Length: 431
Image 1 (cartoon, rainbow, N blue to C red):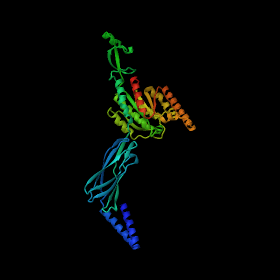
Image 2: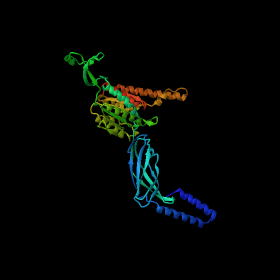
Image 3: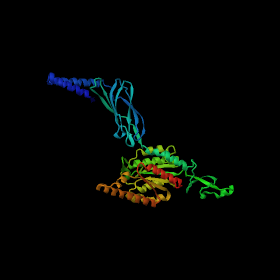
Image 4: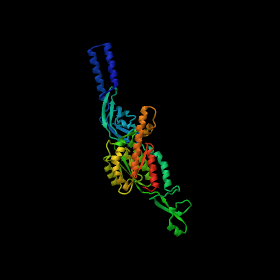
């Protein structure tokens, strides 16, 4: 049962009338009896909320920050009109813009209401209870009941870095020879033979073909294709650190998506592994058209775990997924303690078999602090920032000794920088 504000106003008016006209216990009891009678009439004449049938439809996935609509159909198999309010409850992170609706469903009828969501967190946002309050004809009281109507909207990563994809695809077409630019690198694939022209690299001359044709012939090459790219996401403690308004993991996801989209267009096979002490997400063997949707769906529920990464377990997972030479892109932090105590212990085994690239999110606030001068507090901040930058440079140098490529950039710059490094390795035939 639910009581409305109208009943309170009516009770206040009746109390004032009794107090002014005939103040007595008899008057008060008469007013109470009358109000109880009116409430009983309203409850008897209100439509049944227990028998309502509710079903959902609408969006099942949406990109972070974009609107999604979820419809709720209300069917009334009863014999009375159901008129009142409906509350479609969602968790706060779902960003429901209009969770309360007025409804009027006639007997045997069906009505629909739509709730607009604008989520502000990744992951699965699950609907809570649907509460329906059916008022009687007097509007003083009504029947109320909550229904469980399950529905889940998966909030996907926003993929802001997709704006960099057209320019990188243009560079990829140049590498692929579609704009008449042919490159040669160690391990590149043979493409065709053509006559020598002034300026060609003499190392490209094919002497056997030259002897057969009686003129100088050179080989042309194209970037490697069908290479294996394994993107590894560190979901451990360091990925929880916030840079700006988002954790480092979000920038790593954006970089992984841009790299996956680019490598797929280049004809390479791309897999995903998210790991801390257990596998959090995995994509293996997806076709070219399925890679990006599979990556997005696997990444959506990922959250940083406040755990130290099991680097030996991670190395074992990489070996299990990449049995032959591959480009392993590890998106992790460059904290000196984590690298020295964990990552550096397993790097020799990985580098011996694979080309390894480490991508890390740098905090632009560090650069701002390092430039600070003036007040004593700012000088101390600048000193701390310079110490942090020195440690990152030392860590980068240590990784370079193991023949590891390092990409260290702020959140907005990391995705294009990682894509550029991939294109450089591809052009050099080092995949």
